[in-house]
Image (cartoon, rainbow, N blue to C red; front, side):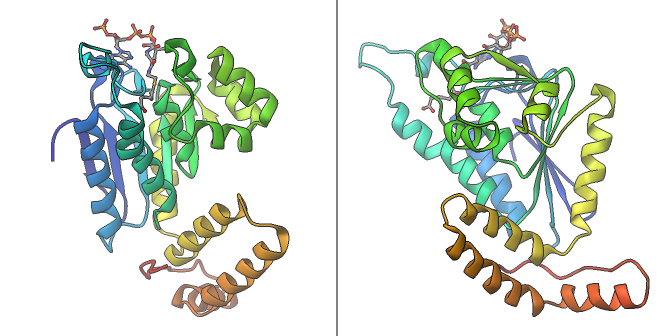
Length: 265
Ligand code: T3D
C-alpha cells in the first residue's frame, strides 16, 4: 500500500487516513485508486466491522488536486466527466454501498470533493476548527461527488443552493446546527471520540448495520409504501440473524449482547 493512504487495522475496524498533509490531502488519481483499494480490502475482510476515515495534518481533504493535469493545455480542456465518474464518484459509491458503517473524523478543512467524501460517510464528527467549503464555484466548476444530493437532503434546498452558488465556508458548529453532520467536537477530543464511536460500531450487529444502510439509501427515492415493504422485508431478514437471537437472549438475561456475525447483506 502506498503512503498517501494510511491503513491501520484495529480490533474489528480499520482507520483510513488521507495522507498528503502538505496539500491539505487534496486527492489525485493515484491517491483515489489507493483509497478505493483500501475500502475494498476492508470490505472483503470478514473481521472488519467498521471504518474510520480521517485526514493527516491540519486539513481533512481539499478536494481534487489542482495540478497540471487539471489545467487546460494545448490539447484542450481536461476530461472532468471521466475523472469524476471514474474516481471521485466511485469513492462515494463505495462508502455509501459498503456493508460497513463509516465514521468520518473531519479534522480540518473539507473542500470540494473533500466535503462530499465526508458527507458520504454514515456518522460525521468534525473538529470545531474544521470547516466545509463548496469550493467548486470558486474555480468555475459545479458541485460533484454527491454534493448536490447530500446537501439538499441534509440542510435543505435554500441553504444548499446558496452554499453551491457562493462557495462560503460552513463551520463545524454551523454544520451541526443545520443537520449537515452528526456532531462538532473540541479539536483535541476529535480522534478519541471518533475512535470510540467506531469501536462501538464494530461491536454492534453487523448484519443489522448493513441493512440499515441499505434501508436509508432506498429511502432517498422510495415512496412510503415501497419503503414500508422494504422495512418489512429487511426486518424479516434481521429476525433470522444470530445477532437478533443473541440480542433477545441478552435482554432476557439482563446482560449486554455479544454480537459477532459477519454482515452478508
Ligand atoms: O472531475 C472532477 O471531479 C474535477 C474535480 C472536482 C472536485 C473538486 O474537488 S473541485 C475543488 C477543488 N478544490 C479546491 O478548489 C480547493 C482549493 N483550496 C482552497 O481553496 C484552500 O486551500 C482551502 C480553503 C482548502 C484551505 O485554505 P488555507 O488558507 O487553509 O490553506 P492554503 O494555504 O490555501 O493551502 C495550503 C497548501 O495546500 C497550499 O500549498 P503551499 O502553497 O503551501 O505549497 C495549497 O496550494 C495546497 N492546496 C490546497 N488545496 C489544494 C492544494 N494543492 C492542490 N490542490 C488543491 N485542491
